[in-house]
Image (cartoon, rainbow, N blue to C red; front, side, top):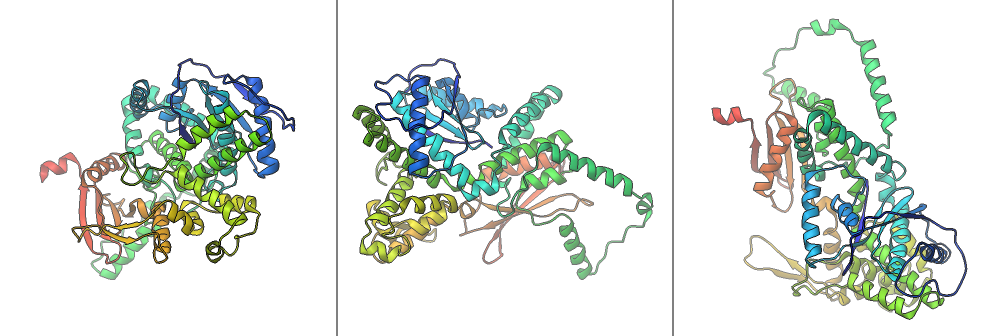
Amino acid sequence: MAAASKRKAATPKTTKPKAPKTKAPKPTSARGLLFDGSEWTFQKLETTYAAIQEIAEEDLGLEVYPNQIEIISSEQMLDAYCAIGMPLMYQHWSFGKRFVHEETMYRKGFQGLAYEIVINSNPCISYYMEENTMAMQTLVLAHAAFGHNHFFKNNYLFQQWTDAEAILDYLEFAKGYIAKCEERHGLDAVEEVLDAAHALMDQGVFRYRRQNFVTERQRRERAEARQAYEEQTYNDLWRTLPKPADSEDPSETERLLAERKKQLNLPEENLLYFIEKNSPALEPWQREMLRIVRNLAQYFYPQKQTKVMNEGCATFVHHYIVNALYDRGQITEGALMEVLHSHSNVVFQPDFDDPRFSGINPYALGFAMMQDIVRICTEPSDEDRDWFPEIAGCDDWRSVLRDAWANYRDESFIRQYLSPRLIREFKLFLLNDDSRDKYYEVGAIHDERGYREVRDKLAVSYDISQNEPDIQVVDVDLKGDRELVLKHNVRDGIPLDERNRDEVLAQIRRLWGYDVRLSGVDADSEKTLYESRSVSQRAKKED
């Protein structure tokens, strides 16, 4: 699914709906100033694109999808990234709510807009603000059309979990399908399903099972073939067989339970998938809507795991290319200074006691690590030779970076490449927060004893399998009470927030149609820590 990466602009200006586009030009080796002044034109964009492409492909060795560049107004940009960065997204009230919030913040001057949005698709579509100056268009061309584009095309997570060829067609289908459902079943009925599905998006992905890329036409053909086979092989005599009596033998009960779980492929981590396939209450059009939301959640799954690497790659690429353009005499010193001013704002990292601190800036960490890899490859210290013997002093930093961009995610990239020198520069330290103590404890600092522990803990903080709750469907008796039984594997004694837990359970019950029970079980001791249920209104009255 779409998208996207966005960078914040400082002070955009006007609102003027307009969406012309330009096709990617062929590369050229022409030298001389590409532009002079702040105003951009499509001719300047074409010549600048060609110069950037030459550096990106011939110098850095980047491989990208064909680019499609769209110039849009500030209002269109607001609309795009309020729809989770997807200009072709279907309509939902939450997108409008976010639009009002973002627009108010923008109009009052509390925040700027994204300079660009880029979609992981083939061709790779980039949306740029028409209010950008020519210098800023140069920056975002290098950043999005080549930095993000190269990362999307080559990183193994995007190759395994997303289909850049089909995403645009699928988005168009999803938008049209939900619009038809609104016409046929009413806006309230559609939003009721979407509200519940959106609440489960984080639990609507396959984390360990690679998704098969099947087109909409192929899926329908398979469903029709499966239905035809079932009709041909159906024998009514099976219906007349007597049902086995309930057994009081514990071993027989366990066998039946195991058989039931095997038939339903339990346990199942993808809640949206299980409900879509097995809910007794959903109509076919509602199941299709769950499938749409589930596919969108799966599309964003690689982006959640590569925020530092993706933004670091794009920031490194635009920084290198813009400086190369200046060294070749193709942009003025004024344009370079404007770009570097914006670049410095993007990679700014406030200290932990600064009021502006909100965590580690992924642009800052990713860019710094990639600059550090260049230093290790070209000017290593004795410390670097001890920590990175395979790449220290090799001089081929381009190959090392391309390999990292292709074969790592944030967690493994930090664990592999965060150097002691960068730990010192960022002044990283480890703070232990044990609920049994009345105080925090500094567990490690940036010294010889603390480097590895700081690096390991920082890497784990980017591992979403450790940070997102592990909730699985573990049982349901479709021939009995149909109560859906969920299990939350509690890590480090951290339970789910009670209010959010109850609200989400209510949404699951709405989709499932019957009672839902959730048990929080300690992942180490298997001890049940809490239980929560969402039951029907009739059951509540009986209680």
